[in-house]
Image 1 (spheres, rainbow, N blue to C red):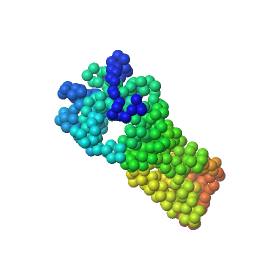
Image 2: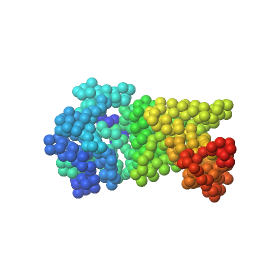
Image 3: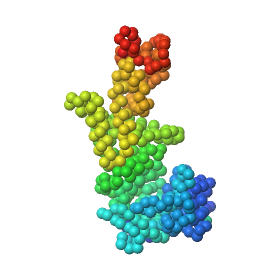
Image 4: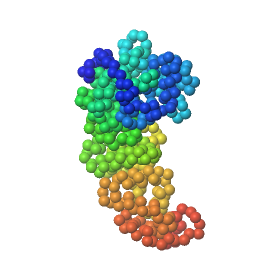
Length: 453
C-alpha cells in the first residue's frame, strides 16, 4: 500500500457491524448526532469520520467530531440555520451549537487538476482542493489509514476502505499512498504523524518515517500561523512531553523550534531537565483540568537560547537589562519566522525571562516590588524549573517559596536594611513582625528608619 501513489490505491470495503465494534452513540456528542440524523433524514449520506472514530474505537473520549457527507457545503447550509461556510483551500461547513462546532466536509474526489471542480497544486503542494467525489475517493485521499474510518449513522456500522482497523490493532501509523508524495502535498503531515504517534502510543511505520530525513526542511515552507496551531496540538493537548520526545527522535524538532534544538545539542543536561519538567507540568495541569498558557511553555522551550545569548551580550560589555532584551528580541524574531507566536504571548515570554535576574536581587524594596509584578507568579514558577541549573538556584527558589508564605511585616523585618544571601534566609520566619500605623506596601520609609533599604 505505502509504495503506491495515492491515485493507484484501490479501496477495498470492509464493513464492521454494530455488534463487532465498541462505538456507542452515548459517547458521541449530541450536536454531532443532530447533524448526522438531519443529513440522513434529508436523504444524504452521513458519517462520523476521522479522529473521532479512531479514538472511540480505542476507548477514548474525542473532543472534536467531524462529519463527512455527499451533500455540498451549500446543501449543508440549507439544512442548518446555524451553519457558516468557511475556507478557500478546503471548503467546509461549520454547524455551530453554542461553544461546540461540528465540521462537515463534502466527500473529496481524486480528479486531476484542470478537470471539473476547483483544485490547484503548486510544486506538489495542494493549495486549493474542492473537487467532490464518492466516499471511496474520499477515503483514499485521507492521510493516515487510522483516520479513514467511517461510522455510518444509517446502520451504526464502521466502514473501512484502506485497512485502518488493522492499523488500530497493530498500533501503527501508516500513510495512504506514497509517503513522499503525501508529505510533498502537505509537509505538516510529518508533524501530524509524530503527534498522533505520541498521543496514541503508536509507532510510525518505517515507510512513513523514512522521508522525514530528506523532506523535513519542507516544513519551512508551511505557513507560520498554521505551524503555531499545530504546535498547540503538539504541546497543549495533554501529551506534550511525549510529543516533544517524538519530534526529537524523528529529527523534526529543528524544523519547528530551531533555537530549542540548537540549545539542546550543546549538551546542557540542566536545560533538558527544565524543558522536560515544564512539559510534564503542563501535561499534569491539563489532566487536572487547570488552565495553561502557550506563553509559559514557549518561554520554557526557548529559554536556553535566550539565556546563552544574553550571557554573550553581557560578556561583550552590555548592560544586563539591554543584554536580556536583545537576546529576547533576536530569539523571538527568529522563532516567529517559523512559528507565528502572537504578540500577546511573546510579550509575556519576554517578561518572564526579564524577571529571572531580578530574583537574585534579594533586597527589601526589590523583593516587594518584584512580588507585586503582574507576571511574578509565572516568573516564579519558571524559577522553580531552573532548580537543576545549580544548588544555588535551587536554594534561591526555596527562599522565594518561603518568602511568599510570610506575612508582609515579618518578611520586611527579616530582610532588614539590606540584601540577604539566599543560603542564609532560613531565619526569616523567626524574625519578629514590626507594627505599622498604616496599611501600605511594606517598604523602607527613609534613611532614618532602622528597617529602611
